[in-house]
Length: 222
Ligand code: GAR
Image (cartoon, rainbow, N blue to C red):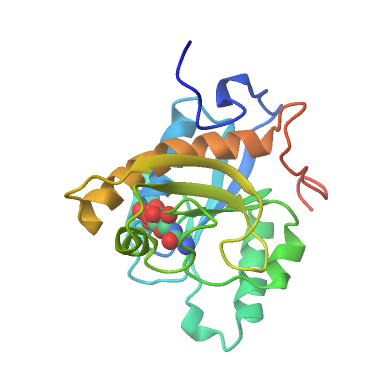
């Protein structure tokens, strides 16, 4: 018998959507997960297109990554908005302009409001570097090491108003080794994130019959 899969249903069993689904990536930093999603699309593993990247951080390395890949990257500096709702409204404007269907948070370090959630009901995904519901919030890898868990990992979930708490789509487990540092453990978690996130997106944009994933609502282009 083969090894049990950590991901159900297996992404290989998932039907492809008829047309590439337009993704909008929200990223505040390095953008390695953005790059992994772009790579999965190029490799034909994910029938989608990254229509736009939005960042809130002028210094985010994701800006350079997007430029190298020829994908538009829009800077919406959160410091220029006095209220979270106003930032979310500006984000929505860009997402609609690029006809984005699914919003993919990849290292997006801002709390979202009901404004964004209402614009993309059930169609916003987030990635978190722990096995939720453990170690929500900032410094999840440090939290896991400090707590002394022997297994941690990463989680892809649908975004709700409560931080790191929406329905779980997929998880990957990563063992904590006795001599792990935050850096060494995070490196192995990131390797799993890069594998998991494209698969989880694939599951969501074309959910297989019988899956317990929530069905998206609204029109493809709202
Ligand atoms: C990822 O490890 C992701 O799990 C984490 O930010 C990193 C972004 O990496 N997200 C959170 O902590 C959200 N709570 P990347 O910029 O290299 O893709």
